[in-house]
Length: 240
Image (tube, rainbow, N blue to C red; front, side, top):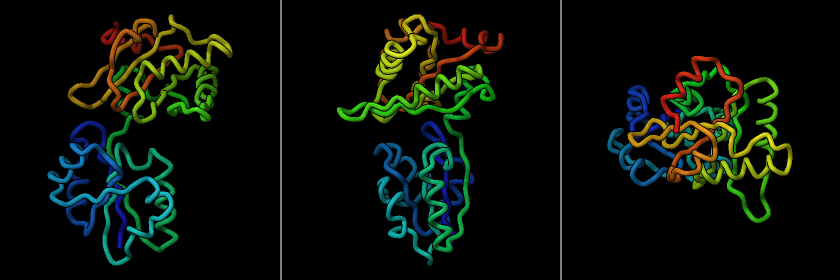
């Protein structure tokens, strides 16, 4: 039995030919929750029913779907190993004496290069969770400060359902009470639905980026550090 973790990449049809061929050969195909449209599209491409897994199924009870008598595919958005959840799944599978294989695909960590910023100049990636009444962490801002010290760009990944404008305001709110390093005149890059037909990339001062409606799907923010002149030249294509 082999557990295949297959990346579906970014965008509507980011899954590779190898990923499609591998999924077709598996006895069962699983996936974390996608939008209904993407699930149906992938099901048509692969030619198999896709069984939906919840995050707790993968994190807490993988033995419920890992069956030693069958080859199983788990479809993962982006690249399978960009999230620690799937690294943990591999460890759990090995503990059950189940072989694993990875089918890679594009992810936001590589595709962000479409902004013109060099992927080699990014520091630690920071995730901004959706604020809740008793849960308003600021650790992502600490990562930003660390990156700034080494002149590295910061990629902020926004939680599901968050919009770019909310993310920008959260970053500025923390900065206002701490060190005032980020304000309305700070330059940033707003990215929505990268890899899709209706993708958006905009660059400029935060006060100008806040004028746009980006929707709430697959969004991120980049605050660049010191840029190479080629990066600056490329970003002019997205200047607001």
